[in-house]
Image (cartoon, rainbow, N blue to C red; front, side, top):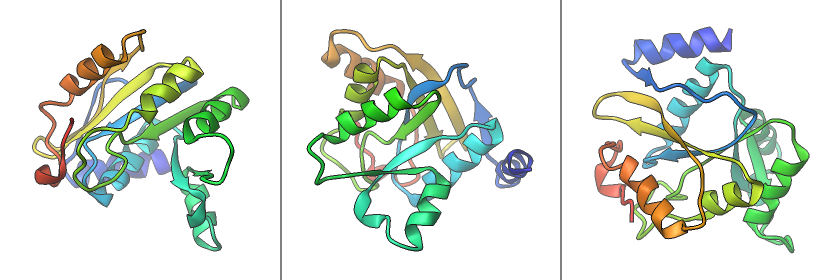
Length: 181
């Protein structure tokens, strides 16, 4: 039912889905650009329309009652700042202990304009030995979906340039808040 409703809602609000989500059980999914909370809603509708259960990270301080229950239902995973392990290590461990894990990360890490993309998504994918799905939102064309699957190499600088180049033509909801550097 959620799948049907999500497809219907996307169509009613004029959004088209593009690209095929790859077969497989473990991916880091990049979601860009991210400048609005509406991005989350569109992304959630898209994943529901595909029948995919995805996770995303939120600081553990937000997991108080009743918000924590709602966040977990939406797919949130708490990240513990007080932990001895880094956020990257925590997510790599999540990949290791699960048979299926689709982790969505926004490289900007916030809806505000940033000086440069965070690289955590890359290090998580590399450390967990999983591919990166390059998901996108394009508000100009009202299209969302998957651009491609990206396999990391030993050259992070070249990989980041290649990944960012794929997002050059995507229009954010708030373009002045989007910076790919």
